[in-house]
Length: 315
Image 1 (cartoon, one colour):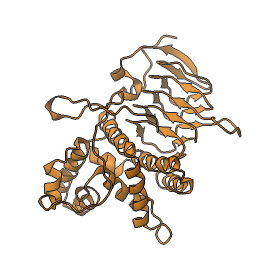
Image 2 (tube, helix red, strand yellow; image 1 turned 120 degrees about the vertical axis):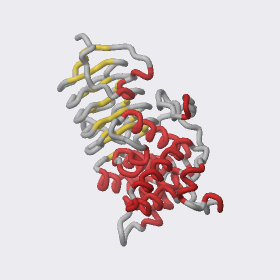
Image 3 (cartoon, helix red, strand yellow; image 1 turned 180 degrees about the horizontal axis):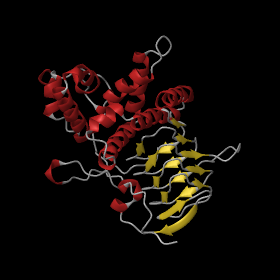
């Protein structure tokens, strides 16, 4: 995946920082379902005690609040969140339940495969935390981080890709392609395991997102449904788009070929991009044309603000 600077940027009142420009939580990662300490054996006490991992603590706190208000959710939240020792452990359990094939691909074996990939590549867990922060801060429909963790197929497809990319990087192509195939079938999101994807990514709605093998996506990028980062023919080699930091790609857009989308660029809904888009530029139409350019601070990048308008641009 694209390189991520491993920093934590604290804020006031104990609230987690906005995941802007690769400010990531520096958390210890663990993937094994080890026994919980006696003092933390109760899911409720575990959720309230705090683990030192602020993202995971917020996920668990939201799960406990939902479980307290909706008794029907207690076992579901307990099994998938409150009884788990870490975000990585919970991800492996949750994804394996989603992606397993009864009688052919056992859930336990798939959970072990996912857990092993996340354990060998702790950067995947750090990126997952930044992705959760991105969903919470950019998506007004995300009332609690645990809802993203449990229900948002864009987030889950991206985490399946992170595990698949870890396996691909380790030379385990067959296992990586298995995860890609199952994630595509279950979530409707098809990301080749060779694609490199940065941190703080939001796939908003996500259905129909396709990302090719040699694509590179930077940090703090937001991509809406129906987006393709694809090739233009049968050529081999480096043939897919390179997307910079802070980019926003609107619904139904296609970016085709080994083109570069500069940092802070904005691609309008339905655009077909066949040429490079300079940094800070908005491109719309088919074929896409630049309609203006604007310098922005990191916190004003389109990928962070989700601002899809272009009224402040001049042709």
